[in-house]
Image 1 (cartoon, rainbow, N blue to C red):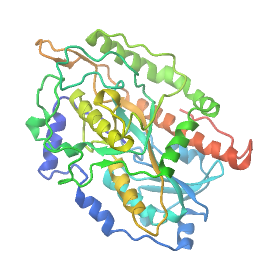
Image 2 (cartoon, rainbow, N blue to C red):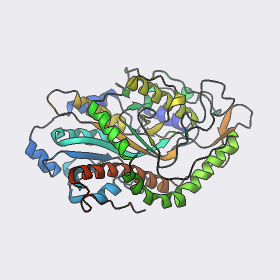
Image 3 (cartoon, rainbow, N blue to C red):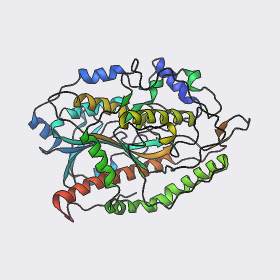
Image 4 (spheres, rainbow, N blue to C red):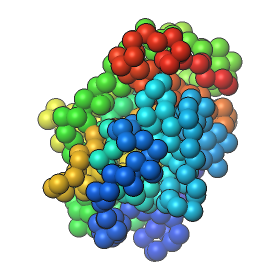
Length: 437
């Protein structure tokens, strides 16, 4: 889940509040220790079978928003697909909502953690007590993205020109990655956050950085197993099948009616401001960005603007260098900004690092619901870049619902393909009902 971004240096005020002990949630080493202290894995298979409603291994699907922010619960389309539903009472779980049953004959648990890394970590940790029955774990939801691979501006550097258009990100595009980083680990004060303001092409100051663990504990999460990468690859492969193309086709009309007008206005404003032409083909489904160009960057507070996108892409590059060994810069990646991975990743990594317990492969699936910055133009002062006058307003309730739809279709298609593998082309058990908007 990603909260709507503020404007200019408002984010720095939020971060200052965090440093002064304000109410905004931020992940720290103490939170990781809380997970460890609360850890009580169970070996009682009967108890876990009762909790999950099955003695078979389940695919665990977790989302953040119960609908409080966007108006659409991120679990909506999974809940609609579940057969043999069993709602777990709210007073017996730390998750915001918990539902068990089957989707396409595949045993599943659908959980809503609540928004933020602490809520996600608590729900995850509780469910990992039954890791012996968890086949795989998918955290799925919405996120804010760079408008293109490598972003629109890059600093340090002169930024005399905006970056040429390159692999544009569209609303509803999907990132599939097992990697994550904590954006807050740079720890800059107010003046450092807004260094160079009002010029957008300035890189915020870093006091520490994502590989410095003295304050927050681990900031970059790249631990993975062969099973984790296999899960990510299975989901990515599912989106490249004729089955996914057929399933996603139902959303084409919704895209043209509700998303295309905003997208057109957004890139037209960007074109007027930068002098570049931004062209994209007719929509036939979302682009799926893999873990070679995307990691989840968690900001945990209101977050806006080109400078913060630069930090997010820089941290994405550092994370993917450690994870893949590739040589990357902020120009080679895209920022996918959400809130929950830095709660989920340490919880599962802690579990997977303990001897005697079942390993749980996991992946983050994030759909683009909004852009990390408004269109830009050359500053009227002649110094650098600024946001365009009267930027096009986004209809967040529509954009978020569409992003929930594309990411849900990807996960549901993977489960449908598993159904075909286990039951053959069973028209009844594996039949897909197009999502209704």
